[in-house]
Image (cartoon, rainbow, N blue to C red; front, side, top):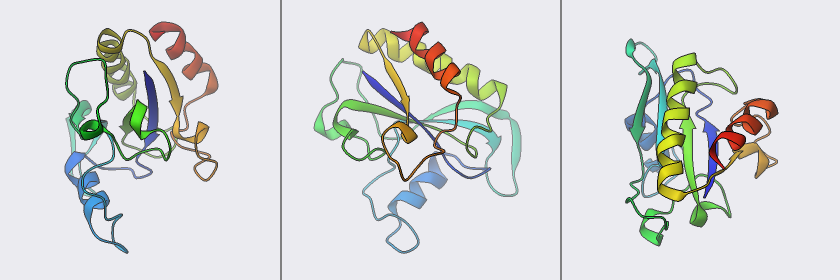
Length: 152
């Protein structure tokens, strides 16, 4: 299964805030029907003014996935043009490449569960699919290779 990693490009956020950004009509939002990502990994900055250390590394669900090996049309994300039908979108809250150790541990925990569900994973970043997003998610090529070695 294709796993595509994203960053929120904001120093704060959670599923409720990202949903609002995705669902609000243009020009304030994207005008989508739902949040684009399947999972979000929080950094503890829940809003521009609220930090809670207990939410650093917390995993939230976005678009729901069932527990089988197939992504059906009602499970498609809206995170990577041309890849939504066969990928899981994971958003790390934060700006490009600036993530906490707890977020990265939680990402690996999440990938372990997805590996059990889908058998093998091919992990990439949004920047691998969209030249207009050259810094999304901003993880090093070495770390992406390490993840792929662990979860293929």
